[in-house]
Amino acid sequence: MKNSTKIFVLVLFLAIMDFTFSCCPPVEGVKVRYSHCKITVSNIDNSGDYPVVVTTGSIPKNNYGIKLDITKQEDSCTNLTSKYRFSIFTSAYACDQEDFAIFKALDTITQIQIISLHDFNSTHPANSDVSELFYVFEEGKSSTIEEFLNNKIYNFEGNQYDLFESILLLLNHIPDANTLQQFKVEIHLSDGRILSSTTPEIELI
Image 1 (cartoon, one colour):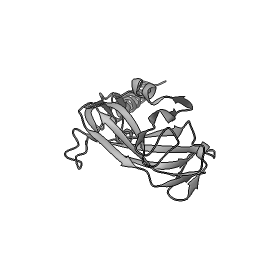
Image 2 (cartoon, helix red, strand yellow; image 1 turned 135 degrees about the horizontal axis):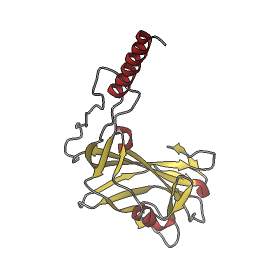
Image 3 (spheres, one colour; image 1 turned 180 degrees about the horizontal axis):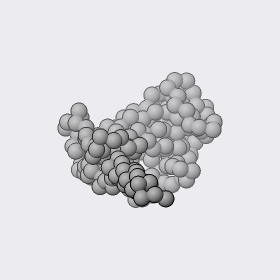
Image 4 (tube, one colour; image 1 turned 180 degrees about the vertical axis):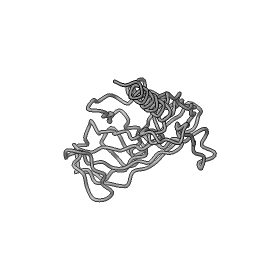
């Protein structure tokens, strides 16, 4: 190989290496503190391959569940328009990566409480705590609400989409009779706040 060819190959190799490292440099994640700010709940029919949200009508009582959606916010919840903004791009070249951050919670969930607003059965009249009648189903595994909270991870790496969380609460003890039901779900936080939301009325058959 001629010297001129060797020099050309070497220059080309160095140019490729420079492009690669300038495009996708190692990046330390931006640290973001977040709070639990809002919850919404929905009735779930779990009789099919996937849970389905049901807003009116009826659900088989042995397939009933509650979908608990938690919205988290950067910093405290006093400024809900605040959003973290950052970029991992340090050159004019665009990398095929997503922005990410190291998230750390300002508060934690100490209790998830489910309250029946109608008579559930003979031992659980209206306004009873029925949390013990539900379990958490996550990634193919079931656990009690207490076990779920004891193992919950609050500090993680991710992107802005990870600030939204859904928890599936499935009914483990069905009522004997067909009944109209409605549940209020409360999340108790370590800073003393309580977030609450109520499901639409639904008939369990």
